[in-house]
Length: 316
Image 1 (cartoon, rainbow, N blue to C red):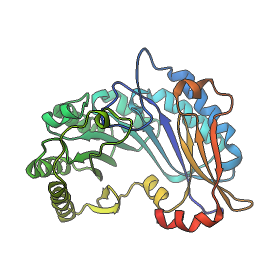
Image 2: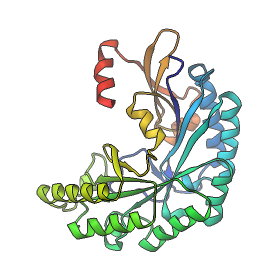
Image 3: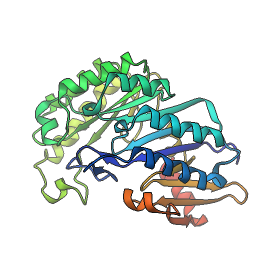
Image 4: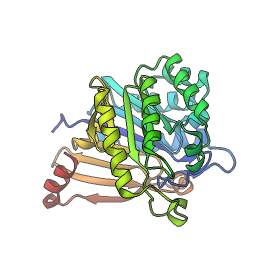
């Protein structure tokens, strides 16, 4: 039981602009981001969860959002210092940060690398200006390319590109063009997924006209074939890796490992090592509620032992 891998997810809930397709717990910045206060709350949140994670090594850290690249490297340095005071990282710990190409600064990427972040995930979504505009993204194709340059110049050798397909008015040729350009940038990992209209999003309320289902299926098969031919092997629903460089944090989810989530709306799946019971936790979702809370946990549920075989198979 002590060998169950443990990952840490850190949620940064702010972004510059809410994308119309996004159903994540993200909130457009209205004034300024309370970076220092939020980091203090993250540390307090982690400290409150210490009984779950003491005597266990951290396998991976994933900083997601929102837009984590809105926070400074100093904020993450402060956070890591507190976390590693209480738990020991594995020697080869993977620390991923999601970044929006519209928020890229070369020095900031270098600073991220200097404080121990060793993997970036760039939310490019497309390299086609028309499609980026339709998706409501704050960056253009040139900024996406500059973000990849900044990533490599900062010393990152392991990075992911996020791409979407089945976009409004997209053609099969445009799907291949996006994939071809993405792979020409030499990422180690690709997240390639279909645009879907999720509840509680602007696109769900005002749906754009998407390609027909048969065309979407053809796009998927075309992309699968292209990625496989270029040695990008699929290892989960929308993730492809080259040279066995799968995202270790992703793998831990799919292999039913434990993960602790801190931050607004973060989820946890944790095993009580003394009795082997598994719990799922949810932190307060809205940033204001989270920051003001004394107890960060909004929900705590014991997983019914009879549900565990299904949960395990669903993941594995």
